[in-house]
Image 1 (cartoon, helix red, strand yellow):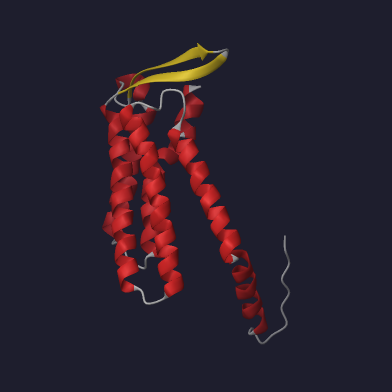
Image 2 (tube, helix red, strand yellow):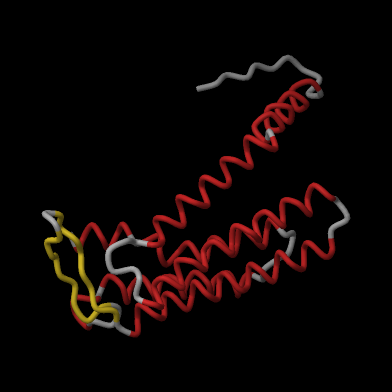
Length: 188
């Protein structure tokens, strides 16, 4: 269980790094190479704290499997390393919000402005998980999974509403119409 959990939670410490890199590229704001390496090194350090927890107990004081109504549930006692990961999430959320607010102020395009505002709104949903964890309401439910589900549903609704799939198809059609040579597109 712990082995699977260590690799299952690999994304937990790398989502903030890759999320911040995505948001910066989306907002057309360049992050210097040194900062990128520092972000990846920070995520790697947090993952090492997480996977070596059985040795030093920096992320969790203990991890136990308990039975609740016939279901096995992982019960933990969080230590300062866990809250360091949570603080990294807070840093990611705040940094991303600042990048998006700056992009909203700079752009003249209304459609791009709406896209920035939508992503900014999605970022606010993540604070629900952070607050649930800090207040201890995460004992029987994983708020991160719920938040990811809500965000995915909101993105899905946005995709359908804004017909972004059709925009992607039109972009490919334009590319092939303007290529000037015979070309085949094979869906593999």
